[in-house]
Figure 1 (tube, rainbow, N blue to C red):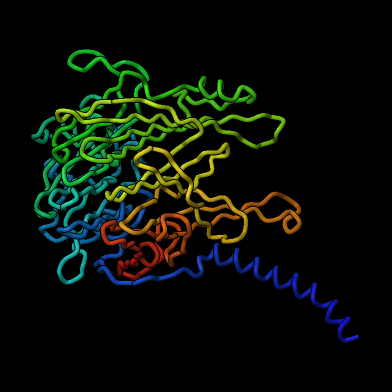
Figure 2 (figure 1 turned 120 degrees about the horizontal axis):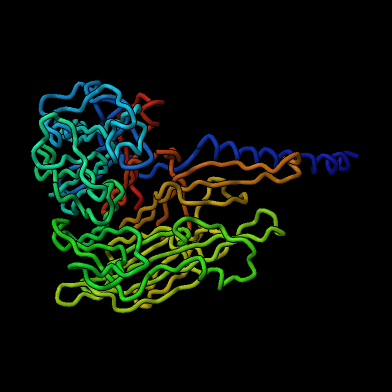
Length: 502
């Protein structure tokens, strides 16, 4: 009889144990419990919590051989932080006077700044770590701005969205006078670690994007820089521009002082008609104004004479009879470049069907890792490039905070880095509870997480870092990730910390 009772209880105990385990996995994912803390160190501390205010882009820590920078952005005025007299007002550098603090109507706001809410003015604070371990405020600007440093740290650029004045001399009334629509927003540079800043009238890769903070430069060595926009679909031959089709890629050999545009003899883009030809069985296709689908461009410089432009496109369609299941057709156009007599030229163009490269990173030592999609559902996986054959092989899956439970993971906000011995990624994952547990409707549970890998994506370890805006930056040379305890609005902790991922 006791044995019979035990046999009856065992299934109940097992069901309860599975339910508790399931709830633990879900709760730990949603509440961000757990995570490892390898080689935790304190980088420094801010004097005001708003110095480390993180947003979706252009904020965080940038480490160079000559200094450590911190960029924060928040809806407040610079005077609220009581800046010292030597703190540089970049609005005054550009316009000759500090920014006006009163609200402006949308019609009075600048061309570039009007993309943001004119009544929710943000201030970007640029700080630098001093010898005492404190982040000192060195400059501020009333607009989003991205800090970009040369590999040796001697040149630091600030790519802003502020409208530039018409000339180098501020106008008499102190108001910015916008040039024609093709003019790039204001770019600043410092060569003395933030003591003095100058405005660059020629901008920074100004042909690549009119809004400077949209540019995400790719450095190779100390002075070589690449930047890009979308490729062109037709010839650009006029005036002194060569008769060719723009790849949308620009190259500088002198640290960004000058740059040249790369042209090809054939377009690197296809239209939706290409996808329709590949999948004539798809009944409906989602259309966009550009007719080029999802679009991503990447550049990899392999050595001093060879580089590759990757242009990935993905088109979406569906068959109404298959419910809400979407299908994708992907294509990556690969343009191989060769440098001759100091000039890059397109040597060959090839198409890789069924490949979409969502993100691409390299560590400067010959290893290239990407987030690649080779299926029909838009699901990224970890891929490694054979730099000799220029072919991709899948080495692992994107990590998920839901662990062994079934889930779909995607890269969050482009947060994917590569160090000398590690990968760092921020993912957003969706889990669908089983219908027997949530029978009355289809449900989705979402959660974010930060993970690192020391075997190039084959396995992952979760870090004790907030999944939403938790990463402040990554130092590739030392494999260190920077983070803070919460954001400015939910934490009073002034510290900035790091983990070592080696």
